[in-house]
Length: 177
Ligand code: HEC
Image 1 (spheres, rainbow, N blue to C red):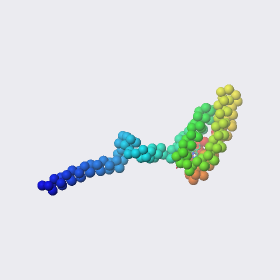
Image 2 (cartoon, helix red, strand yellow):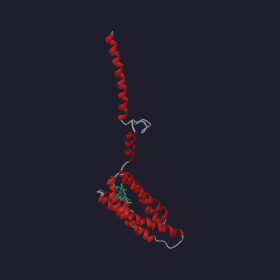
Image 3 (cartoon, helix red, strand yellow):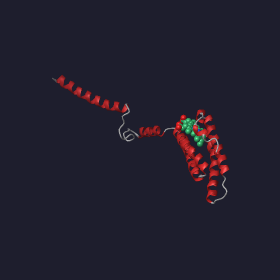
Image 4 (cartoon, rainbow, N blue to C red):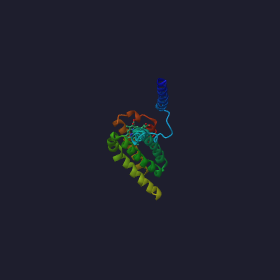
């Protein structure tokens, strides 16, 4: 009798354990609860989730590429304020990118941000002002600076060992005005 009671108790424990493991397995299979951060056991685990969700350099480049297309079209339209808006955002995107992937910083600064980026930024600044004052614009200077910046994007792709990035529509469509 005593033995049966014990084994019943043990049985209950096993059912409980199985239920718990069942839940854990469900999570392992990718069925997550609603609180994808709050359900984690520690802040460390939460930050890990966030780090992985925020991605690395490629998400920054995805944003950069999208804005680059808009900059090109805006310059072609003579909408220098819009071009300038997106050109500023490109610098932030690249800086955010190398905050996450510091190994990319040296080439990003040397090949792009410290030179070509600034040239186009200041040409756009002047273009915006002259458009406001209805003066003769510096459109040619802006377009030249864009072409130099385009080459700088592509030089970094070669330097960072992703030369295949340069053989895509984005760069073909923007190879002249
Ligand atoms: C650090 C130098 C560097 C600079 C500067 C740079 N890129 Fe990139 N780019 C990369 C690297 C590295 C990748 C591959 C990302 C990865 O795999 O993590 C990439 C990927 C990309 C991608 C693919 C993104 C995706 O995953 O969808 C596009 C589009 C792109 N770059 C456009 C540009 C444009 C446009 C510029 C200039 C405005 C530029 N890049 C400037 C290094 C650079």
